Length: 283
Image (cartoon, rainbow, N blue to C red):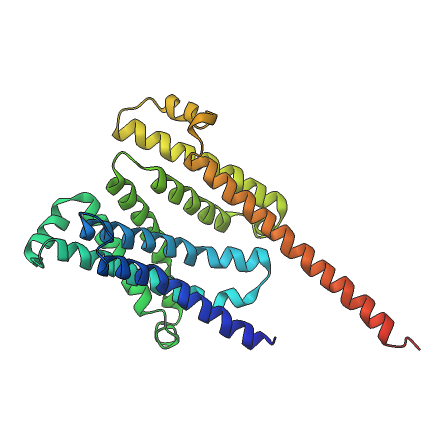
């Protein structure tokens, strides 16, 4: 299979994967399988998928570098656009829940802090999606990269919005925050450490500890729970899996995937070398 064919199939599979959550949600809504509050369920689901795809778009650069697989750069843009589209759907379903009363919606966004920061994150994602095309990149030139640095504050605001909206049950929000910590820490690591095993181990430790801190700080500041209780919960086998443990598992999985990929490439190079030696005369 040629490189162009690989890119074609990767783009196709990515597009299908990005559409599946929306199709599944729409189908369940059509069949009245979203429970007694379908609008609320749909609002939360689209918000969750917006965060997931936002994190996935940020993950493409580290994955491309650590796996040494360039085709991944060809799907990063469409994943980012999908994150913006799911965020728009998240807002539209909320507007539907308010019976399309835009005055009420605007008032709620202005009054409620978590809605305000969520709306700001949405505006940033929409701006990035609209200007993600090659045409806008040519028009903006150097300013294009500066504009697309908005992805980082947008991601941070989205995670804070996720935390506040989750209220007491912040497990998923803390897990997302830990993954974002991994992605941001990777970007501040020295270049030589980003693709090395010691660097990936440092990232695993750093992201895991950051998740514990996020969770303990949230419960301590917002719910008044002793942070030591949260720290103790992370080493209690009966309370597994905790968000930090999930982040650690994801980090270890990345290391394992990188090792498998590099092992495959090394084996392929060795096989190719021996094949050439057997089939091509040396004299």
